[in-house]
Image (cartoon, rainbow, N blue to C red; front, side, top):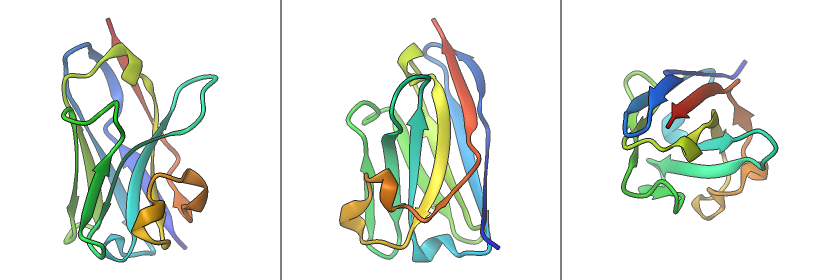
Length: 125
C-alpha cells in the first residue's frame, strides 16, 4: 500500500522559512516524478515544484522561483521543499504527490497517481 506523509508545516511570519518533508512507503521516489502542489481556500490546486531523478529534472512554479528549493534523499525515500522568504500569499495546504507519467506532465495535478494528506502552511504579515 502506497502512503505519502507530509510534515513540517506551521505558522511563520512573512520573510521566514519552513522545510516541508514528504516520506514515502510502498513506492520508491527515485522511480517517479515527485511534485509539490498547494491549495488555498476557494482556489485551485497549483503546481509548486517537481523533481525527477529518472528524468534528471527539477522545476518550479513561477511564483516560487528563487525562494523555494526541492530536493530528495533517496536513502530516506523522502522529498523536501525548502521554503524561504515566505509571503502571506504562500498560505495554503501543501501536498506532495508522485506520478508515473512523463516529466513533461509534471505540472498537471490530474496526472499524479498518489497524494499525501497535506500539511498547512500559514504565513502571517
